[in-house]
Length: 291
Image (cartoon, rainbow, N blue to C red; front, side, top):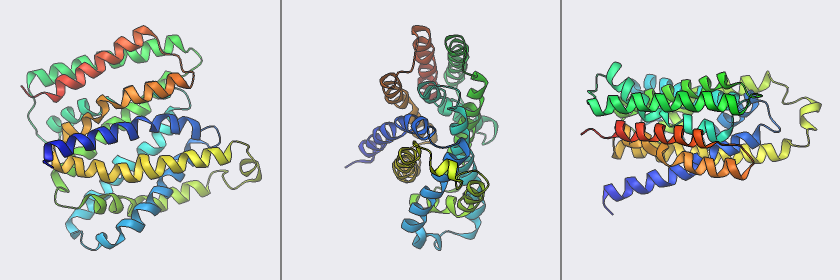
């Protein structure tokens, strides 16, 4: 099978997996705090990836470890907590649409930090995308006055970190195996996640007797195995066989999957928000096209 076909398969698989992650986060929060969710997600994923990829760690050149550390923080550790915190206030479907800013931010950071040239069309796409984002947040705040849409900032900050991580992998970790990158990331972040979990009330009788805890643990396990561990390896491979912007364009399809899950779960979503979401996706599309 030719590489162009393979990269599209990777893209579609990732879209479905990550598009379903937002509802899994929402359901996990019924029995866990945001910090417990972020910590458990990191710990479970770390155990899986380090078990599967431990053999590959010794093959990683010493010069690459600093980039694996930065990649682990920006691409896994901090966003795991930020998305959990964000979804305590905003709907999962909205969080997924805001996550579509990753390709736009990939262009911005690629230009500002990594000196990757951008076309006028890409810049126009960035502007359109941010207009859509602004409308989406403002309309969501009006439609859901009981929700604090300032928490959308946690998602937007995560998209900047994801965008930086994509550029780091493409520029500095291109010759490292995808499983080695994923496992190497968690060498640095699994212990801090365990420390954070120990400082929460996870092991208290009140939490352990929470009637929603078992379901929450099931959801976070599914999220960790598929939405993080498996997806990390596939995403790293996708970056290596394509481009940073193509890889980050997984966010084209993710909002559709997440929106379906959100509506099925009773989340409200207005016509204006749908138009704003379309603007975001148009901006992503324009930023993806170089000519």
